[in-house]
Amino acid sequence: ATPTALMVGTGRSAKLGILIKNGEVLEAANTIKTVVFDKTGTITAGHPQVTDIVGDATQVLRVAAALEASSEHPLATAILNRAKTTVVTPAKITNFAAIQGKGVQATVDGHAAFIGNDKLLTDYTLSAAEQATMEHLQQEAKTVVIVGFAGKVIGLIAIQDAPKASSAGAIAALKREGLRTVMLTGDNARVAAAIAAQVGIDDVIADVLPGDKADHVKALQESGPVAFVGDGINDAPALTTADVGIAMGSGTDIAIESGGIVLVKNDLQDVVRALELSKHTFKRIK
Ligand code: ADP
Ligand code: MG
Image 1 (spheres, rainbow, N blue to C red):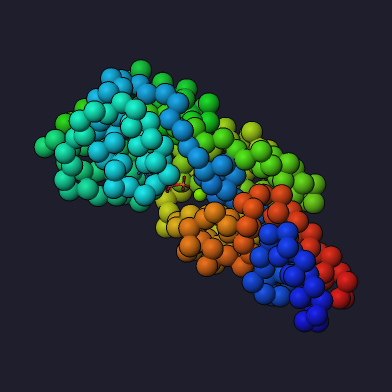
Image 2 (cartoon, helix red, strand yellow; image 1 turned 60 degrees about the vertical axis):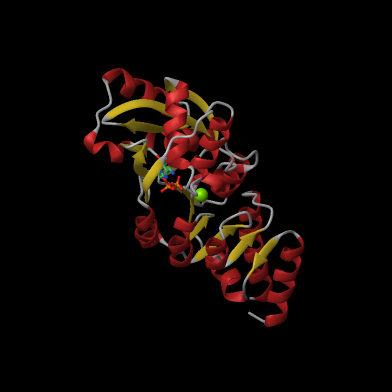
């Protein structure tokens, strides 16, 4: 690879909003067999909205808003936006603790409370009706969080984050190139499968704890070089482990620092363009 050819390649791509950190990254992109995607903010727009509240909405939102007030998770933003229109007197919160990949626990108005997924249900139980409702909402591609308060499940909140308009087309183009596509997410398997079906992704690995994303990338590397596309704090280790890490420009600083390629326009079509550019560049200099 001659430096001039590489600079031509990366200079032109920069104008398109595809920032490639160095020539090695561009060369590695030419060898990729599998493209692994984070879900939230990568395949989906990352603007989650509350769509359904099961239970007494006022009480559910009051407890949920107290719990999410100190959380930095995208789901927290959706819940706080919805609560703004309903909650009049905020609840009192102490002992806040964020639990990675699961949710939030705290004391609310003097009682133990939590919000999050079923991994936090140890001291609580869902009724058969609540379980059925939750599964139904998840099949509609909605992320469901459970709200527990004073020893009881008081409700469910369903949150939707639609795929970006270009995600399905980009995934189809990668598949036409003979690449395997995989979704890797901390969300529930039913939600992940529903989103994967909407965008045409082949394989889904769901319920992944934040610390385990990089290990899944390593396992996938056994069948050849892997590109990982993500945006979150919890994607940083996977971005560095992958043969090519591709970060969304809208992502967290740590994701952007960990990526060898940064997509300024947050558009998955630019994953296709980056891989094509690599192919053309390395064909020309051979
Ligand atoms: P990802 O970024 O891949 O969606 P996360 O590890 O951030 O995964 O979250 C996984 C799951 O943990 C969420 O789908 C949700 O069920 C639960 N969770 C995490 N943080 C929160 C929070 N602040 N409030 C409610 N649920 C949460
Ligand atoms: Mg994400």
